[in-house]
Picture 1: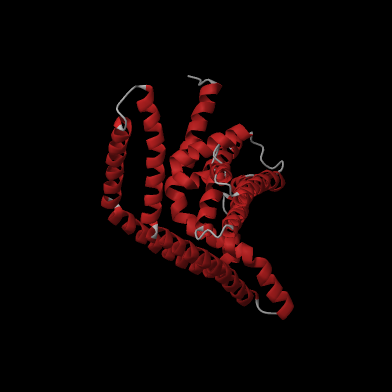
Picture 2 (picture 1 turned 90 degrees about the vertical axis):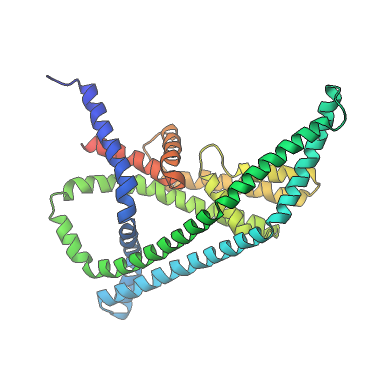
Length: 345
C-alpha cells in the first residue's frame, strides 16, 4: 500500500520535531558543558595563535595560556556581575517590609477613592464598599504571604542546588577545555573520517549561518540592553540598577512585552509626580533599547534568517511554554534545526 506524499511529509515532520524536542529536553543538558568548552576553546584560538607566533611558544602551551586568559576573564566578569546582583537582591529583601508598606498604603488610598465613588453611585453607607474591598485584599494578601513562607525553604534549597550545579558545570567546562585543547587534532581526524561527517557538515553549516547567528544576535542585544537599562537606573541612583536592568533586558527579548512594559509606566509615574528629568531618562532609555533591537537585529541577522518573523514569534512563544526562559533561544534555534533536518532528510 502506497502512502500519500502528504502523509509521508507529516510523518517525517513529526519524527523530526519529536527528535528535536527529546534532544533539547534530555540530551542537550548532558552535553551542554562540553559544547561550551569547545566554543570557548575556539574563542581562545586567536589568542593562542598570537602567543605562538609572537613569542614562539609551543602550540599546546600557548593554547593553555589562552584558555586560562579567556576562562579567567569570563569568570571574573560573571563573578563581579553575580556578586553585585546578589548584594542588590539582599538589599531588596532587607527593605522588603518598607516597599510592602508603601504599596499597601498606595493601594489602600486608591481603593478608598474607588470605594467612595461606588458608595455614592449605589447610595450605600459611607465606607461599605471600601470595608469589603480591604477585607478581601487582606485575605488575598494573607494567602500569598502564607504560601510564600511555606515555600521559602524549598526555594532556598533550590537556590543552593542551582549554585552547586553552576560550580560543577564551571569545573567540568574548564577541565573539558584543557582536555579538548590537548586532543582537538585527534578528535578532528576521527570526526572527519566517520560516516556522520558529510550529513553533519550540512546541518552544522546551515546552523552556523542561521541558528548561531540568531543566538549570537539575541545574546548581544540582551547584553547591550542590560548595559543601557542598568546605566539609566544608575543615573537615577537606584540601588538595584544591575538587577532591574537584567530583568528588563530579558523581558525585552520576550514577544509582545518589550522594555516598554517597564519604562513607559515608570516614565508616566514620574510625569504625574512632576519629576520630568527622571521621566526623560526613562523614555530616552526606552527609545535607545528600541533602536538597539532594531539596528542590531538587522545588522547581525541580515538575510541569514530565511524565516518569516511570524514563525520566529510563534517559536519563541512555544519555546517559552516548553523550556521556560531558555525557550527564547531554544525555540527559534529548534525551528531552524527542524527546517534544516526536513530539507536534508
